[in-house]
Length: 197
View 1: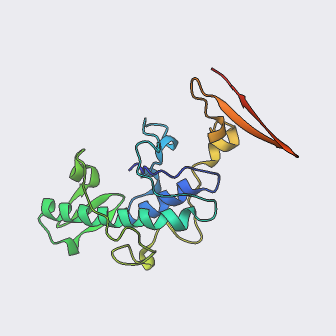
View 2: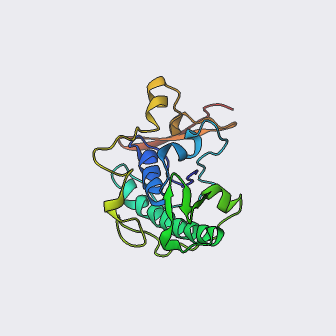
């Protein structure tokens, strides 16, 4: 499962937090979850050009602002997947169980991947955001990933420790220029500086 959102990692661990919320709603394991460029085995990247803008982000409001939207999308996707699994396994939705993205019921099982089969699920997310435990989201009593104490390791830390992480100020685009506005007491001086070409 790859989560694509317009929110970027700014050092507060939201990439891991967002994946925890989605994994919880989908009954998947964290090792099955990927957040764009943190997935070394994939070419998928978090790109604000291909992801719908989910609004602004700040260090203290990223989870509270975007987390409920991800929870709502996960809950809607989960219900759709359960419906598909019930039809495939020929059993009522109420008898299905899900663990690690595998749906079981009636003595058979099917994975999310087998259900979707590379197709696009065109779903309407309504309501657009859900707080923890609010139906159709997963009941808080059933949480296994978003728990305290939490054993989930932040996915952004290893590259930050080794110096491999690319911060937005380190992004280099061919032909990129930088301008600056310098203000002095009593007058304004504008200087444009070409960083590289």
